[in-house]
Structures are given as C-alpha cells and as structure tokens.
Length: 321
Image 1: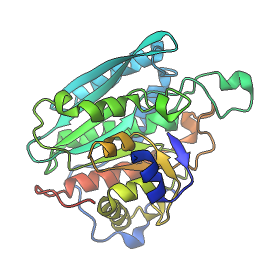
Image 2: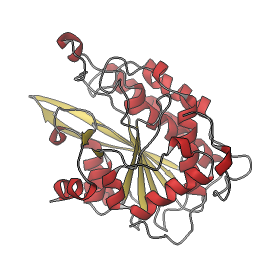
Image 3: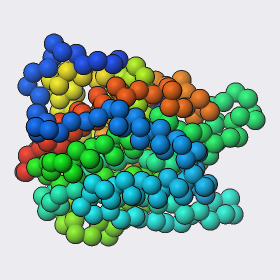
C-alpha cells in the first residue's frame, strides 16, 4: 500500500481520473449469535503460522507452502473454495499469482466481500541499510494480520451463518513493486474479472471491507479518506458498531492519511469498498515486521467489529454511499 497526505476528494479524484474494550460505550451493538465469538488468540496463532513459512513473496518456497495451507484452512470452514491464478512477466521472469476465495452462505442477495493480501514484500525498502533493504520482509502485520482475522471470521461463519452471503478473498501480489503500477495485482485482477471468477454469484457485492495492517500492538485505525469518499455510510456504521461494542479506542474518531491499497481497484469497478488500516506502524516495510510487534487483542477488536457488522446485516442491502 501507499500513503498519500491529501484531502479525501483530491485523493480519490487522482486515483479515479489500545487493548481492552471501552466498557462505557458497550450498548446498542449488533449482537453476535450465542456461542459465536472471535478468538484473538487463535487468530494470533494463524498470524504466527504464516510467518513460520518464512517470507511469502511470489516465487518463493514460503509463498507456495503458505498458499497450500491457506486453501486448506478455508476449506475447513467455507461452503466452496477455489483459486484464481494469473501470470505476469516482470523483469523478464514470469510469476504466477493466486487469489484464494472462500464462499459462505447464500450468494443470491448481494454478498459482502471481505479481503486481505497474503503475499509479502520482496524487499525491505524502508530499511536504511542498503543491504537490508534488498531483503524480503516477514510481513507479520503487513499481510498476515488481515489474513489471520479473516480465517477466524471464517470459523465463526462455519458455526453460524450470517443473514447474508460472505465472500472472503485473499489477494496475491499486493506488495510486489516499487510503484502503484507494480502493485495490487490480485485485487486488480479480481475487480476486473469477478463476474467470471465468481461462478454462481448473480448479484453485485453490497460492499467490501479490506483488512490491512490491523494486528499491531496498540493499534488504532483512523478513518481512511478514500474509503470515506467511496462509502461514507458504511464507514459510519463500522465506527458506530465499534463504539457501541466497546472498541472505540481501536477506532478513534479522526481522519488519517489517504492510502492507495487493494480497495481502490474495487472502488474503480463500482464496488463500494473501505480500507481498515493502521498506518502508524514504525516497522512497515522493514525486517522488523515480526509477530512480536503484533497483538491478539488488536486482532480480536477488529475481527469482532467486522463480525458484528456481518451478523447485523439485513437481507435487503442498506445504502453505503
């Protein structure tokens, strides 16, 4: 992803042309079904498991091993799992990128799209040492955190289906290159081809939520301006849900920087999508992005809020713009 310090309207025009719940606010939230809860500890174990494969840049052994594991994990919970692979020739070498898709529930009434990227950056460009800057990153927060949260949400959906269908997509090739034109490969391919890829889905997505860098210790997610521009009512519902559920400290009522991320290709193809991201992370794109910088509590907060959104959905889509 890329950060841009500019107002939300200008950013979109350019693109398109802490750790315990705040108990005092815990009223009026959409209730999770009885017996269904998001386990931050289990999600954190999934974060560490991804890192155990090593760096996961396309073409690496870790990338291949993690892809197989992620597919098997989704197969344990989803009604249907399939992969969406495509190739790109970069610097004279051909690479295979693979999006992994899990389908949950009824797809006939505008499903919700949840996403994260599962690849890691091939070089640590934020390292000062030029030798370190050429090495790939482990990506505990930048990649593994969002994926871990979605795997745990998938387990919840296995126990109790929400009122609407849910599609979980793990994007590949988000963090490949040095410019936006060399990144977001998986989300761009999916956005361009989802009607063909998603066989059996006859209606468009009601909205999308992207989870990126949501696992850091002390994390606080500000309102991302491009998301606000694309789906302001959805953003309000997320922040209202967080506040009502007792997670206001993780979702402060302030605006952060505009981020070019995997939600942008979706927005450009007419899918109202938002990015839940905490960019205030000193280990971004460095070799220090490791599991010890992350927290089960942060994963629990974000995962619970997203799950509350899903179980509070109505059969007839509500406006998000």
